[in-house]
Length: 418
Image (cartoon, rainbow, N blue to C red; front, side, top):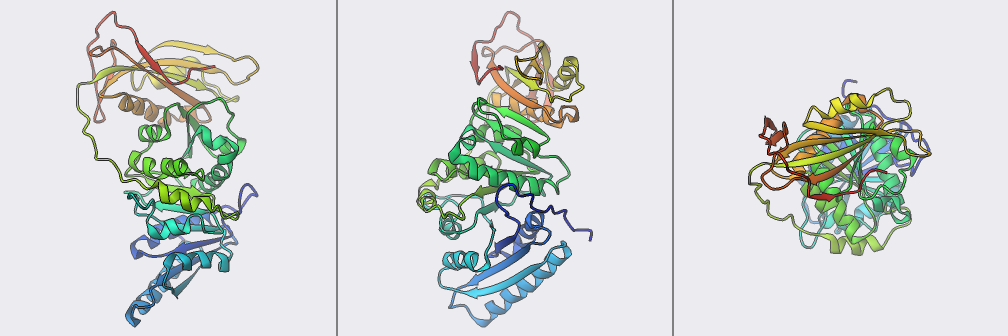
């Protein structure tokens, strides 16, 4: 069928999340996008269970509408090439009804829609917060974006590579692998923090390339993400882990689709219930970005794949699409068969985030860098200076700024190449 999405059988990596996907339905407008996501996640021989929970005091008309909605959802699932079974339950506590359905249906994953905002008391809202920490299955909590997603972006922090974060990361990798199979653009991994630990092979195989931004995850996501991205965020079972993957990423990419992968089952991490209670935080008021463009130098280090056929000059030509390049270097670290290429890119923007976003977008769009791992450092040039021939970035437009000779970089942040 024209709307049918490709589905991949479970390969044995991580949890068999596609065996039975439970989709609680509270908002009829979210049924289609949630079912489209479920269709991309379910195994070929798996099943999708739809659930609507009504309060005991609602009338017959509400029940009739709910069952009609389930019939429409089942028909929609069939048009997507998957089978879904709908159920309407009556229960005084919506969260308890969902938790009970997880156990009764033997769900391998719970897929829930989220409005995308937190308060001082709730992270996802009262219903989802209740399910988090009580569910016997992992959760995928989705804030739908402004447009259909075309690419999966998987942020990975240094904390995710430690033992305490491995479960959430494996779940996120499995979700990204399945969802990325149905997108027109290849998946991208966005690494943040230190690069001391090696990325696991499952993670690198899921992506077309790896970007490494040493700043905090939400800053890196703000620089790279587009409204047409689906960001799959792994969660560590702590207050800070939940806050980093929900409130901060929701602020950083307000128009993108955000899927929060919470590895809560089958162990039933009770600590998550308390963590959710402490992680809610409303978004801060937006601060207008003002001021003249200033010069920024981005140091880009490219770790080429082993089977590459790119020359260092070709890498430099890619980066020259967004700014003036210099200080081209190439070397082979001892004991590593993958060469490194480093290039400085000078451009001007109102703030370093915009400058880095321009460079990252250029690198991300370069098909010739598929399979590479790209790291970024930011160097600030003195206030008021502009490197010779630097490309200025202002609301997406480019212009050439004047050069003030004799200026040198004064401040540096981020980790350097090996």
